[in-house]
Image 1 (cartoon, rainbow over the protein chains, first blue to last red):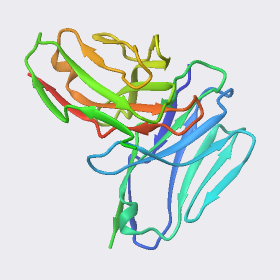
Image 2 (cartoon, rainbow over the protein chains, first blue to last red; image 1 turned 135 degrees about the vertical axis):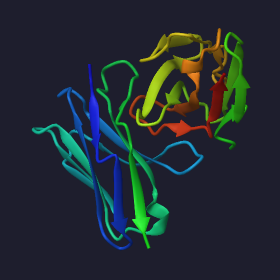
Image 3 (cartoon, each protein chain N blue to C red; image 1 turned 120 degrees about the horizontal axis):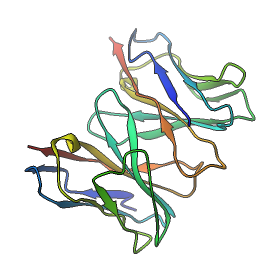
Image 4 (cartoon, rainbow over the protein chains, first blue to last red; image 1 turned 90 degrees about the vertical axis):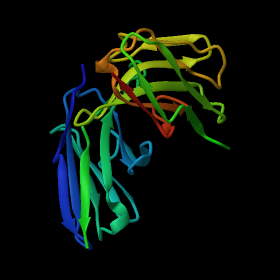
Length: 113
Length: 112
């Protein structure tokens, strides 16, 4: 079955710098990769997703890149702000499988003022 | 829209007790799921449902039961609580497999 590994587990960056979180997956048939942000005391919330037919997707300060050959995808946050501090989760799913997103273990992002 | 609601927010149980965690959504979503979140382990799927009357097991179903009698409600039952079930539980709903999942605020459960 699918396995998703996420690195690093904690990332501390200076406000205004960029942050990159990387996930690798094992099932080459996986074709949908969402990223969720979880703020303290709340449930996760989708921030961006990508399907396997594209290599990159951007939404203002956040972007996701996908390398199908290497089986990894990354979240890029530019010009980080204090409100970016949260735990970020990646996930993967094979869309023709049963309904089971496989999640990474999460990255705690700390933005230093 | 209230989105996804969960009750209770906090619960303490003694080993062997049973209880039901409630989950409801008002977005007419077909897909609903229950996750547990433990430190350093991300989200693990307990049970899910692709529509009223249909449920299936996720990655960690043992010790839990679900039912889906209506589109709106998806309760999770702990049959005989164990300390290993101490966790934060999230309910989520979505239109489909590759659609955004909307999460509830979570239930923090402690089993002593």
